[in-house]
Length: 68
Image (cartoon, rainbow, N blue to C red; front, top):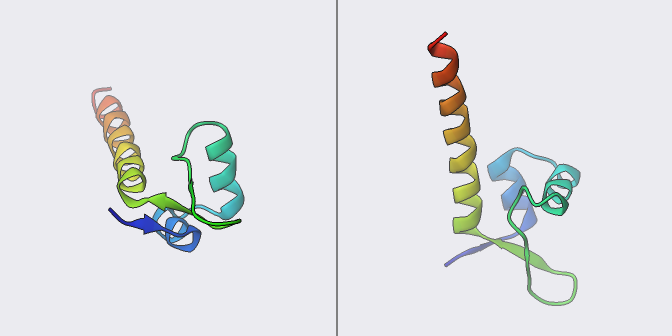
């Protein structure tokens, strides 16, 4: 298991810091894991799963528009 720091999460998702924390608050993005003090990280597998889910949503929507 690997933990990702915020900079890597932002790089992988293409989102900004504010949007990432906004989506966490809305329950639409994986929660961070507290490390020490103010340091947090995210579980790599959870971020990868979130990205794959976005791709799957895109593909479903593309399939729906192809049927029209």
